[in-house]
Image (cartoon, rainbow, N blue to C red; front, side, top):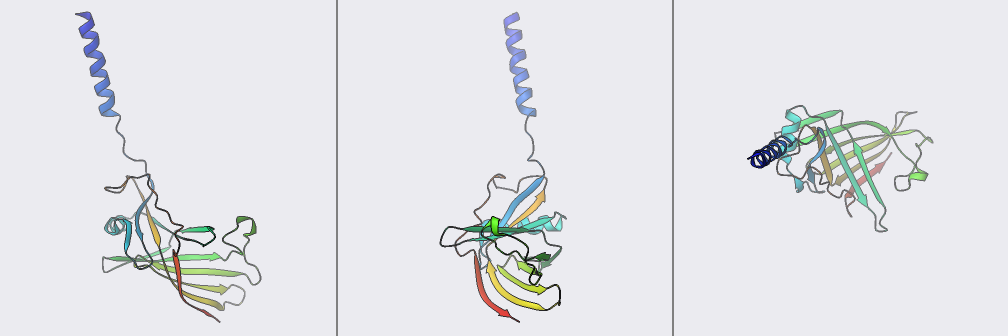
Length: 186
């Protein structure tokens, strides 16, 4: 009898332990949606991204490329302005950031100082990417670029996006991940 009671208590303890050990994913940055250079969905769910923005979740955007020699560059930025357009796309603007001297070799990366130049950019879930470079000494815009890019959109959420493995992070260093449509130097 004592053996059966002991066995029953062990089974009950194990059941309680396993049934209460489920935890939600910790709050953090989660990849929610990835578009290609034409705005088509590569992974995730654009509606989940739009819902996260409507709920006030902060977002980040990553984009990158892989050169033919295998060199990669992935950039991340947090927008300071977000437009929800027709409840179907996001258009975001990034704060000014200093231009680096090199993006493919960390040991050669310094801030551009001759002349000191900043980058300002706008990106959209439809794949378009517009940026300009500005000389901060003179205020003159020195380069305007119209591009398309594969973008990975993150949201800071309390749980993993529906139907997704919260640990899966798509490859952002894709060949052709950034496409230059046109560039103008002033």
